[in-house]
Length: 178
Image (cartoon, rainbow, N blue to C red; front, top):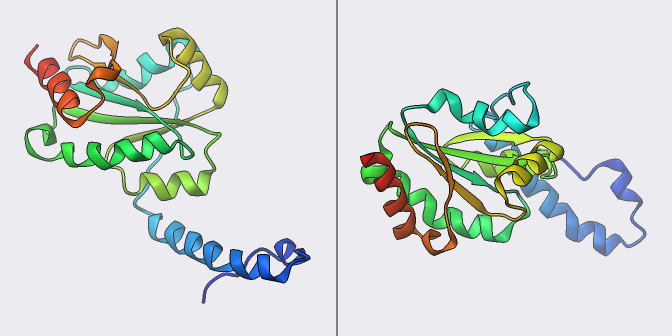
């Protein structure tokens, strides 16, 4: 059967509030159970924070990598997933393109697992200080934030004018031709 809210949640003084939360909790538990086995979080390399992004992308040298910095609570990130996921079919479904997603551990783990189960790609969940170090090094403190990594491993931020399905196709296809 469905799991009830944790016992400490039953201490709510307002029974109506408790009863309203119960179906949401049950649905989250159902989604979490369904995500098990589908969601894979890559091991974060044990390197200095200033070398972390380069180390994460190194195994993909010779391929084009689209790096997506996002988090569970980012509405814009979830909005973008709606047009990014369909790009992974057609000519961008090649083994020469890697879709790499990086979130920080400020995202609640259960919610993160539920989300990544439906996002095709390679997933990393970094400590918040690692995320901040990469942001400082590459000049971003917002999300979603995207980078394109060419076949030689050169990292370049995708500017906002290309933050669309057609813009991503253009940027990725240009990197594939190099």
